[in-house]
Amino acid sequence: MNEQESIALIAEMISETRKKVEVTAGIPFLVFGYLTVLISIAVWFLLSHTGESYWNFLWFGIPVIGLPVTTFLKRKRVGYVTSIDRIIGYIWFVLAACEFTFMFLPLFSSIMGYKLPFSILFITCLLMGIGTTLTGFITKLAILKYAGWFGIIGSLCFMFPTGVHQLLIFSVLFFVMMVLPGHWIVSKVCRHA
Image 1 (cartoon, rainbow, N blue to C red):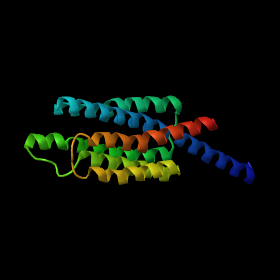
Image 2: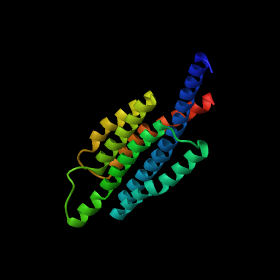
Image 3: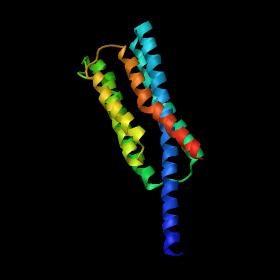
């Protein structure tokens, strides 16, 4: 193999890796974005109409449904893992572990009779905004960078708990931060396929 063929092979491998990352990046954004939007609207509706706080347990449906569906869809479309996939996976693993830990704070605080000085919606939007932004920088997808910053800045709406209607703002932020970029990424990959 001569120098030109080597360069062409490396360029092709980089192009294929980027395309694969784009394909796999869109799937979790759609799955977790739609799940979060749907569950936040359902929780808002049920809390507004019943006043029963046990409807908040629906939030646990996001990881319970989202993780298996995302894993299945990603394996179905692409079978190998690159180092970029691993880096993005590590980032989201750490952020998801933090989010899962923070999900229990409202439960424990209510059992202890303590009111949290911050909203869990603030933490969630902030963490997911950071993850979206970092994914955008790693994949060089500008839409993810902008959507992530939108989520980070939008998280400031939730610094102080003000009521159940914040869930509607939360669902809009997640739609813009995850669902719209997910559709854009998937449609971009489909156009180039």
